Image (cartoon, rainbow, N blue to C red; front, top):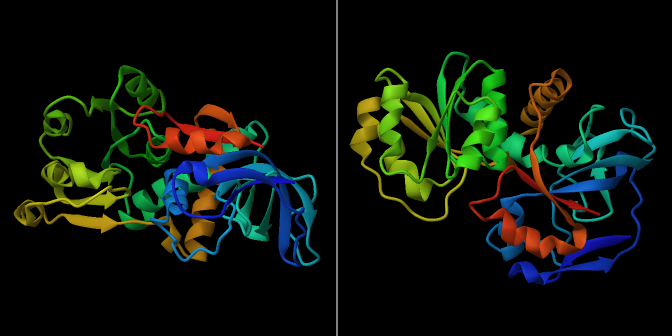
Length: 320
């Protein structure tokens, strides 16, 4: 089969498409023939050596994908050959024609959800769910501000928050992005390229501020975020590309919390909980992943350049 392989950490061009041996599942494992592969910013950080510098080389990148189970191990009880699934984590990496997974690294993909949409679930929805519900403990009736709401994690957060009864304010940088965020259920969308855009938060919340902020670029926004919070508000840092200076007094006056988040820290029960929620949302129509661009697997390097561009909406997927 063909797979992307990385033999040394570096720029996107270190990834190459190679012929590799086919996969055989262990007793509690399954092999999935992939029809779509999700591309996430974290994939680029791992490939560059910023995350997981201890990773054994060479390796196949990728955490997300979707396809059809082609083989199951002797101890597998809840998956079967021919079943449509999405993959969230794997043993062999998803930038490939096939992937081997532990049984419960695969999740049923409802009819009506495309393989491309299935490949857009794992990391984006997982990060959004963990930030909203497992870190910020958001509840119905609260107001959440989602920075970068037109991206993969942002759109997932808008959908998840809306389905849970939260009021959503999103930000985007273009008219196209703003329209997309509004279409996914945000009650208000602010243009984060406009000077003083966060000043409108007080107006939109009757002077109270927001209860939760999901922050994708903390090195730019965190200090200003604190001033937009309600009393007892929480900022969850999902992404940052550098250091930032804040005024602790702003946090003190609001009794605010700054919470870090990484999906890699989620335990088995937390992962099981979030994927149960995703399954229900996919079935009842409240969750609909947005795929903005499909590219051939061989163009993985171009996809890694594209996924970090501010103009990218929704999810980029690779097609094996």
